[in-house]
Amino acid sequence: MQHPPPTSRAWTITARGLPPNVLQLVDRPTPTLPPHPLPADVPEPEEWILVRTAYAALNPGAIFQMTLLPQRFRKALFNVPEMDMSGVVVDVWHPDRPHAAEGATPVGPAAPPRFARGEGVCAMLPASHTLPTGTGALAEYVALPARYAVRKPPSVAYADAAALLAALTAHRMVVESGARAGDRVLVVGASGGIGTMAVQMLRHVVGKQGVVVGVCSGGNAEMVRALGADEIVDYMLYKDLSRHLAATYASAPFDAVLDTLGFQALYKASPAYLREGGVYESVGIKPPTFWIPDFLRAVWTMKLNEWWPTSRWLGGVGRKWGACSMMHPSLAEREAVVGLMERGVIRVVRDSVWDFEHAREAYDKLAGRHAAGKILVRVDASVGENAC
Image (cartoon, rainbow, N blue to C red):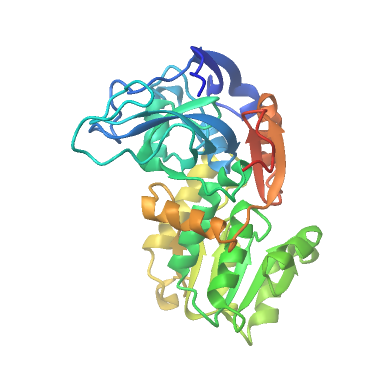
């Protein structure tokens, strides 16, 4: 396998602001193994891998980080955005098996490393690692702890394997909602990156006797139906979506609601269409803009939803509000969702695929908040969109 070049390209954040204004494509020294010093989230020596990135997936959280976090919170010289990636392992470092010549017999009592050079992997880097170290997926080469990666199944395309965060979030939302066989479940934002995953997972969970209803635009209705939704609610047809849901589903309320966008108005009206004891599972609260005042108001509303008693007698909404946080997914969760991809239970819906040089334009599309599925960036131009 070819050795990595001494320098490689990465998109870096130069200041606080919107992506088109703060992202710069730069040449930087290619990361090497082992890292020094070890970061706070991985303080003890363990296996590390150097990955040549094939694809990265864009997430709205990256825009919030760019617009909200002052530069002093990013301590690294190069601050690369994004958490989701796929690629090929080009180097491995293990504390009990340091670098050796190709083909040499390792020495030491430890088990073999999890990964080997040439293997395809997918990874989701938590914020606890990306922010202090400046590590991110929008780079041609990424050095990362092996704990954050899983082996890419041979049947899964590199482009799809990059969309790990959306699948992880949908998986946890389904679990925390308590959805089970035969349930009726509403998915808000059913055509988005998380929503498309949630619809498929719920179809698998609730079975033929259950009902999955997706909220999306009419233009995406057929796509969402094909993923497993029984019914579609076109939000563009109704000035007051909450009122429509109440009028339509009061007689047959849902057992759970998965809100993949975070609409407070829908949660407040949920007693009219969500059964008593049902869970309103949300990714948070959707701010109207990416700027600080709106973000802080959204955080305050989230905390009130979590802390305030549910009882309507005490001023609560009357239904439990669950906030899905995917800050530190376990290795078992990563392996579970990749297994769902491998078995064909879920597939990644691609809104669009952008060349590495056009990452700014890809973020413009993401900021519009009307993507149907995932927005992907092809970092390695030699890896085709359906290459496995």
